[in-house]
Length: 406
Image (tube, rainbow, N blue to C red; front, side, top):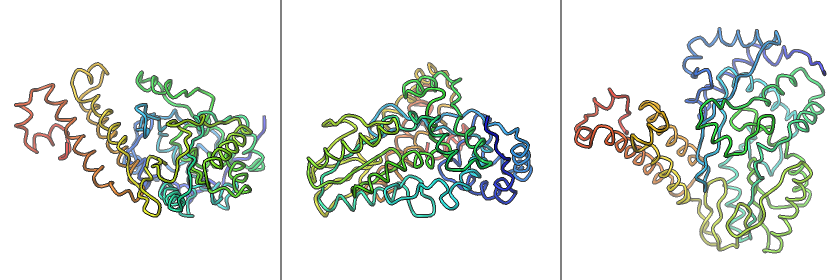
């Protein structure tokens, strides 16, 4: 077994403090917690001691990553949610330390003009990807939209670890990095177990989405694909496993599809077959196309970015499940847990669509909040009756644990 030096400098007190600042200020995970139930706030109350404890275990070689807490979130255009895997706060800090080390000097050599998925410090992300796609779209080109089939869950770990170890030249961080990427989801909850099964997630295969390291690793896995696309001078925007290409006509789009298919096959990945309404589609300049959950619609030179109507529909469908006592009871949920689930669903949708200059963002946010309130009211009325609930004051609702907008 290959031995690696202990990562003394990477986990210095100052680096741990920087990692903590990154984790505690991150919007996406600020209200999430791992399997231990510890929140950012509770960690912060004993932050210095907690950071010292993390450092001690890492340097002693006894640090162990916990199981991941699964958080289902909406998948645009699908009633089946995808899973975001939430590490514990301390696991996030350790991963963030590793991540900051890898980002410095682009140690994994992943930066390129095509990739917008987590290129921190160079202004890359969903907003830049959508803007770039809109820019290309305004030129009146044809579009090939596709994504890599079950990308994160199909990454071959053995090949990945071999490539990373060679790239890092057997640095002290490798063993800890490998342990982090080997993390699996906690499936004690039958509902989570069912969603994991629906998504085809298998223990020992792939990399779980939601970990701080996952986006960078996705770029590492696809670095050679990006290089091949650049060499071919393709007009392409990639965000993690989502791809959108712009070509002069329909035949050129079909050629681009064959190129993508062939390049991904080299790393044991693939794309869905071309179809009229599937995940791999070709669109004319006059047709709307969806990318990263947003819709690029309109005519040449007047394209707008919109949240698609499917987002409204899937949000409504997901909330309706929790609108009656009977369905909530059948899921063996308490009232507090159901209302928290409703809140998490709405927050998840708002954050998913709060990343680009969409023309209907304010409208969607108002819709989400009104749906949340209606769902909670429906649930309470199914338990206590409409007459009782309609008489509740703001103070009554606050006492019951509901926010003013519920």
